[in-house]
Image 1: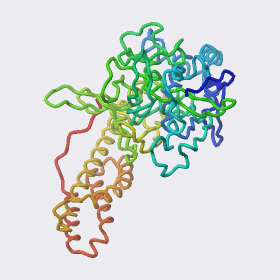
Image 2 (image 1 turned 135 degrees about the vertical axis):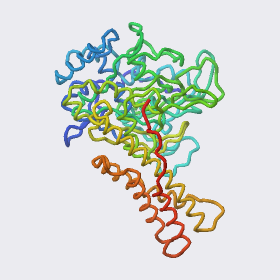
Image 3 (image 1 turned 90 degrees about the vertical axis):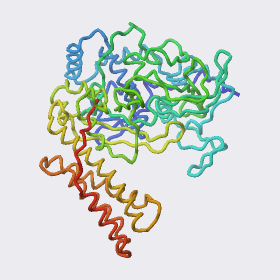
Length: 521
């Protein structure tokens, strides 16, 4: 039976603490209102789940644009940059503007009519709830086995509301596709949902010295041709929730950053509203025609994602696709994409937010780092691993400021990747030769690559400080060392292995034709 609403239970996303933040060595929790009032004293967000932090940054940037006036599409580029510089010079968000914005909209998580980022109609549109275990990542639900968790169908422990709100953001932005709790709308019942707009992606967010700088650096200028007045609205700014149409205009910045969720959610509070005991989790986007298989939605370019272009077969047309998150791939391997300027013939395109960072005041630009938030997932239901990293200040390495450094970075990234490919090839061939096997197993190759990449990172940073050092030779030496380490025991026991590895090492050092530079699009 659907849960009955509890009229006396409240929890404000604006005024109750649920967002983890860090100031120096001190950690605290704040609500959205205090997040903006105190942004100039907060060093950074400290949410334990990187995908929740990445989602919250998008929400906070949309609110930043609202309270500063940077969402005005009538501003010219010079006016917009001047306004952002003025906001930065003020050193904090204007308290009056912050209070005015949060007083104007509804933020109650358990409101009966407009619960924050939820759809109250699910109480009647769904025959049953999804269960708290299905809502919380990592818990077994349904017929899944409880391998590493004490939770089960009969041990559905409540979740603190502060944690539940962070999980809510993960579902809205990184949620799974496939079967879900059936929902009936306009007499049609279906239980199939699309994946979230950020599923299996890695985000790159500018990171300032304070949260105030971080949010202002993360705002993207309006670059469209037109924007209908009043048409752009974040979900909490709308007067009533409605089933989304995937063909609806993705406007800037509200819908672009906060209005593309493919999931409808409703939280069921525990006594007093301090916990969540149950949840409805189902589809939010109503397709014009019911599709047999859920698909990844087509969305507008997210300003914090990098993209690559794929040339379609038998066609000169190019299709844009998001770069996927990979927990085994170190962030520095993407550095060439971040520092190279856009190029119409390139294969990769850096996050669009980088196009506005060069207009920041010089002291901020020189200190600005990049926060990396990734969620390694498959396209449907499997969540592998989330991760985060912080780069050193790198805007002075961009092609606009230091073309020689940017090209050196691109060269080193390219050589590192190509050497890894050659290492995998020669290691497989060496295994096949040493074992007299008809198949080239990946045993040596996988182990050698695992040893190679940490060595390659050390070589990479050394090469940036030594522009005259030959990059192919340096990476080849790192690959040869990795291969020798993983084959040491085999080379001692068997002459055939020693000969095969020696031949493989010679192949790693063999000079090859230089390849075309990898450029950003």
